[in-house]
Length: 315
Figure 1 (tube, rainbow, N blue to C red):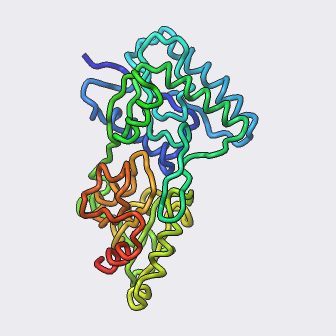
Figure 2 (figure 1 turned 90 degrees about the vertical axis):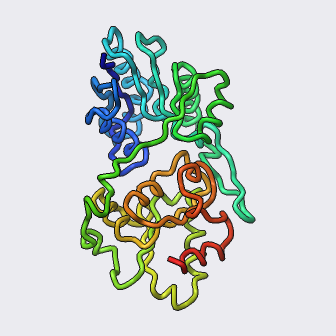
Figure 3 (figure 1 turned 120 degrees about the vertical axis):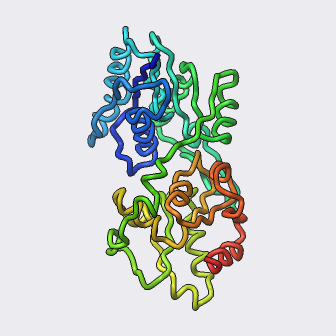
């Protein structure tokens, strides 16, 4: 017998965002009947709102009430909240079990991770008044859930330390290999022509410019390359400096000589996995949680500048 799941999140974030991408992946798997024994009933979400008062009212009152009323008497077998930033949506009383996917605990448990001579902040170290109240609601929601689904072993350890005794499961993110396949589904390099120089070696980063992504380290590595190699490099920072749509992102990964991923910490780390699926070599820091899924040959010492320089030269 097929069981039915209701998905819930907050704003309808696009797949170009990390949490949006993860949500759309779950939705796509269910819609294509690729989760044996499960089908999607509906998705509870709201529009992206521009005004701060409207966002706060919707986040704290309207949308939680909508989710609770939607699940009252529901014939579904499960409510799945697809990221921890919406854990406050877990109803205080629910007729069906509730699972929350936890991608990372960076904001719920901020930390500083040593990288060479500095400590890199991971998560908001000094949240403001409203965010502190918001984080309290998220923790309360996570504690109400029946199951916390963790996308990596590192995240699972963090969750079990904060919520001892809470049932957890390890379910890593999935990607559609056919979508990225450079042979079965190739994209022309012309899609990224305005950001590219096809006479040079294309190296890319993918992600935001927050400190834990360590883009400054990438720039330091590139600046340390031998002159003849540096002159043949075209560096493209996707997400932090250049915005690409989905097709352009696939094209970039299919045609790049390498993805550089020196991040100090990830809940999972989509870009290296997508790069490998696109046939793009990966040079990544040997740190969790991305080192749980990246082959050892692709991992480099976190702060060894010359190891990174040598890795690029070999590319």
